[in-house]
Image (tube, rainbow, N blue to C red; front, top):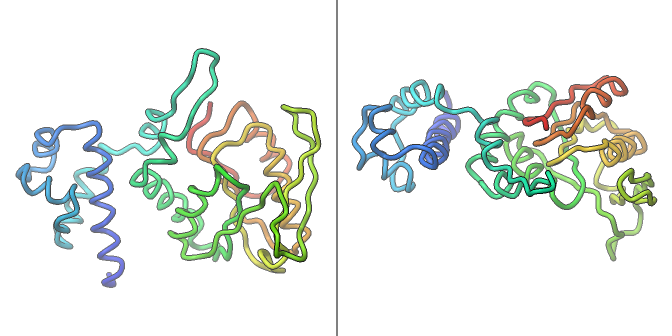
Length: 237
């Protein structure tokens, strides 16, 4: 194991402990790990890092207590109308990093060149995943930016509003032959994601998969039928 990999493993342990600390007390974690509360407290607060040997031991011990999907579900808030707010997921940096690590591990052999999303709620997830894959992130916007001369301009009809919407992406953002992972926080109808796929087609880049934090209804099944690429979501509603 390289030094960089060893440090990443140690940081993963810290993130897991921080996440579990929201559901377990230090006393609980002490019983689970066999470590003193004072040591666990220093880990969670980032005062010290565990040794390489202890990191491996802690990962083995803590992994059964970590369910990223369930942790995400806990943070989704519903109102009386059944509408939901996912800011509890997007704002939890430890959880988002663990989600990104899981997604990146699935695509590490695909040699992804870019992570593509649509502004604005998809950006946090895209940045975390791109960071884990060590690639750049680009995102399409609903308005043209001043200072950009050429755009990929994709029109699509919103099923919720019944109006024509447009996404813009600078032409330099995607290049021919680049392997692209499309991500977003929520997919409901799939219209935005189809627009992103069309951007890839026009740029000559290659979509290698799509990942979403949350999918609503049967949209994943419909997308899988239409596009022959891996498509997945962490939580299905």
